[in-house]
Length: 425
Image (cartoon, rainbow, N blue to C red; front, top):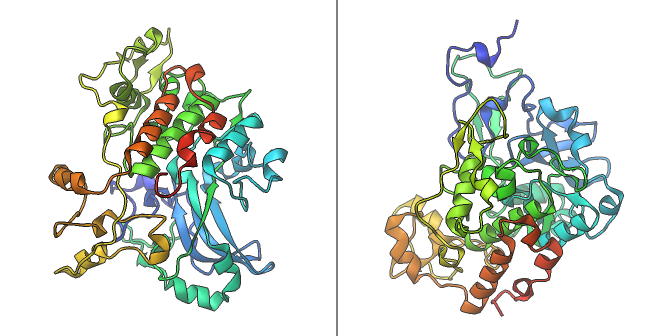
């Protein structure tokens, strides 16, 4: 008889791997992740080649469709949600979305802001528009033109580690023998990435006319609009709030309404008030009470909860952190690990993503963000004032407490900031 993880005398079932970016290992349990292995074949046609990534509810793999001779992304949903997974894909199965060549459902690609506007125009909401769900597509021309053997040689061997249990028992049947690191698409000398953007993951989507309760969404706390923090249902406006958060994150590399304690709706509201002030915060929201998990308590509930506490300091949007661009400077380092961090990405990627640790300022390199790097950040090249003014204007129109005062996704897509070229003009 198999023993469950709950019966184990150890606090965790599995020992950690020696690399980062892998899935939560404790989800390899009954009702959890399926133990996928490189080389596994599913439905008699999808052969697993590499891991693309993982989230809280699935692992995603690069697979070869051996029947149609094409590459696909194979998403393995967590078992406890697999029976209802397809029923949650409200937006992806909507006719006007699934049949549109301009939208970012599986096998389709489009610009993120315009895609959200298209979604909303069809009466649908995404519900989980995080930066993790706005992805860059792989280079389709490279995938289709290269023989499989050549592509695998370009990708290199997968990075793996043996999965050990604290009990000493083998991880099977619930866990795989090895954990596979996600594919590093920035590592190969030939770029694997295109310039096409794709919105993915529609398992939190819903019809705007039939929103779920706020507590039913699986959206990370830091993306929650203020109305969701106080228990109101999600809407198109809460999608727009999340899009604004993602825009700032993608342009600056930093989180907007977040610190390490932002793990619940109550702390997310606190961060929003810190940035936007309490003057326009609706009175009824100020009176919201939160339980010990930081979730809003419904009026009249047996549990009284703790009242919301306004922050004692402020950090307005216009005073937020440095938004920087990449330079070409780099120099040799004394240690191998430092040298790897200081080498810029391959040339094909430098106009798409930047690497702060490869920027040399007066002979010094960044090793991470912290108080000691504040002066160095001041020396980094900044975006032009014109672009910064437009970006702040866009964000201020998005981040309004009242959902009715927030601009729409269509208005976001038409904002002048999106008309700028790669040089901010």
